[in-house]
Length: 351
Image (cartoon, rainbow, N blue to C red; front, side, top):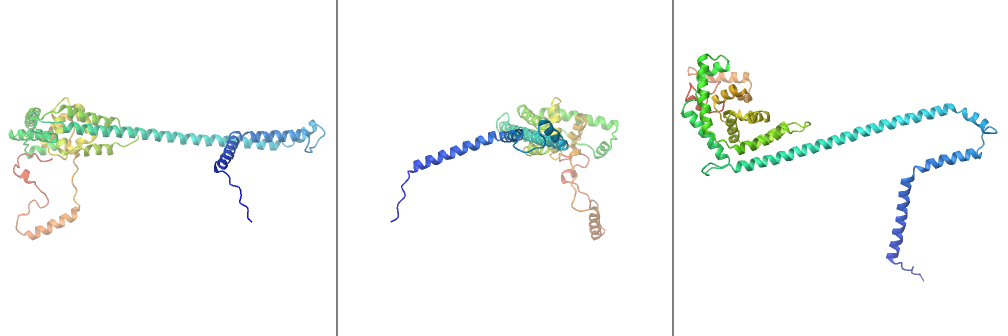
């Protein structure tokens, strides 16, 4: 008959198992802490065994045994050299580890700087958006970008109503060639004066919005960490501003003499380059170049066609052949209908 083993209480069995694991863990921990005593004890044991004479050595006494030991001087030099070499290797490894730690610390510091810069930049963008949403006209019927659009539209209309935006084509050519006559310069000075006068009255100077933008651009330009490129952040900020805002800030920077910091920040942040693609008057570009020493038109890159000149010339010749005796003027060029209405002057279209 098969005997049934006595039943062991799980609590007792678990207690014994925990005790055993605790003892083993403590022993292993003690060994990890005192392992360095093992080689010292082993060397001491070997020295004691040799000193007591349990191993046969040549010589009757310590002096003769010392002579025998001196015969191993080459080995002593060898082990001394190996020990020194090991010390050098250890120092090299430690130096490499220190460089690696310094590199990790530098990367961590740069990461923290970037995170702080980006966090502040995003908060300032939100602050600018909030400030823009709170802008309103004196009567309260317009808000946000509609106020800026109305301000720039009034300025353009006032300038065109006085016809002080018209620059004769021949004068434009002389201006580009830097061959203005004294009469040209006097004529342009009058246009500059009238435009400054009109813009100063028609542009609603939203001081709080302008100051908020300057705080944003100041952080964007001057607080950027040295290890990152500023261009992606300039593109980010530029993408948050519409052509209405760019046009408005361009006119503010152009008109008011005390906005030197705004002009500097617009240039360094790349926003002035975006102004080259918004609605402007050529006379205002001349004024910006003459008084603030920046040629805005130079920022606008020519739009290259996806066809080379050889292919275009062949197509024009073929089309001219089909026309026969019909006029063929202007086959390669194009004049916008907005400028055809006034061949002797200029329009408000982008330069």
